[in-house]
Amino acid sequence: MKRYLVTIALLAASISSFGQDVNKLIGQDDVTRIIKTLSADDMQGRATFTPGIEKAAAFIESEYTKAGLKPLTGNTGYRQNFTMIRSTPIKTTATINGKSIPVDSLFASAGASFNWANNSDVQVVQLGAEKNFREEYLAAIKSGKKMLVLVDPNFQAIFKRVRNHILTGSASFKTDNNQALVFVLGKFDSVKSFEVSYEGKTEELPLFNVAGMIPGKTKPDEYVVFSGHYDHLGIIKPMEGDSIANGADDDASGTTAVISLAKYYKKLNNNARTLIFVAFTAEEIGTYGSQYFATKVDPDKVAAMFNIEMIGKASKFGENSAFITGFERSNFGTILQNNLQGTVFKFHPDPYPDQDLFYRSDNASLAEKGVPAHTISTDQIDIDKLYHTVKDEFSSLDVSNITSTIRAIALSSRSIVSGKDTPTRVPKPEK
Image 1 (cartoon, rainbow, N blue to C red):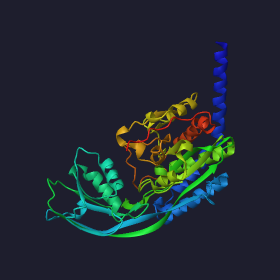
Image 2: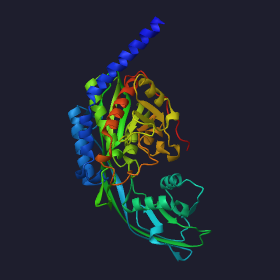
Image 3: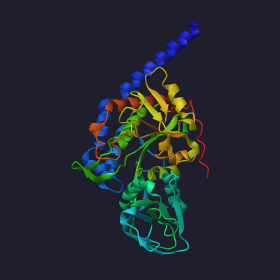
Image 4: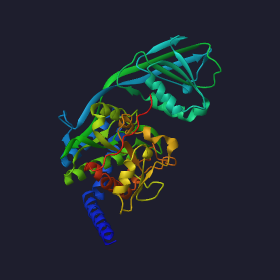
């Protein structure tokens, strides 16, 4: 019993020491400064392909420089540069069975202009009410085919959201002139004839993740990734005279966590594994930044990925809590919980399984390769009325909650950073 009590006392002293250390090294004033800067109006909502995202990248680079991070191996700076093809619709018209389709019930996505007239190589697909719109939509995008997708009116709300997004322009890593997708909202018992005309503009544009690292002391070829996305929606439909979607919670809060954790671990300077801190671009238009990153890192060398997305307010479990997407897919969450024993902070499994959050954020790009890559969040996504609106501003945030969550991630990650713990791999999705 005496030995047991001594062990408990030593553990409590250790937790207390770590807690004091993290509270000192991750200060709320600095967290406030970073997130205020990233979500300010002069960043213009940090939309992909805009001057605002360039300004945000430059700020993140300056923070990495002050922290003393090194560029990724093979890079001369913090930017991980790549290009994408941006396709912007100009005009789309369609008729089915001789009847014109209303413009608001139609959208197309393609790498080049085209005209269809009962083409035999076009696959006609019925997206019935019993199907999952998100899954079917993503499958169509990845198919590489020419498809006319007839969408059940039950999906009107999500159809409208996707259509509005597509009209601002879509992106891809390469132009595939053979792929063209046309989505039509409506009930069609059969398709006897169809005609579609699509005119679009295509251009190749630069993008960049912002990434730095702290080389590992004893296990430099094993990586731990801390990530968040720094892009957002930019200028959107005005609400009460405001048109800037500042993206304070989504995801300036996560990017702030990445920068704060980089500073924290650089000050400790005792990491066994190499730590990579990356702010992803183009998450909002298809997780393209993380997809590119996943092609530049050996997934077998990545021990874990801490993706941080929307930690700006208390979770449904209350203060000092967050949830982990895909909790059941590896023992990542269990390790984090064990490292927080003796503190007031708790990690919980994702309470929103119907939202499919595990595959809706940047962690998915590495999780698909088997990496224990999970997203940490506090957002009450089912009732969050500020999500993707101009009201997602700094004034809506609970900076104390952000700071406590960042500190909890710092404490909970320490046994993975030290090389003591290695989370189990995530099962790869079935093809």
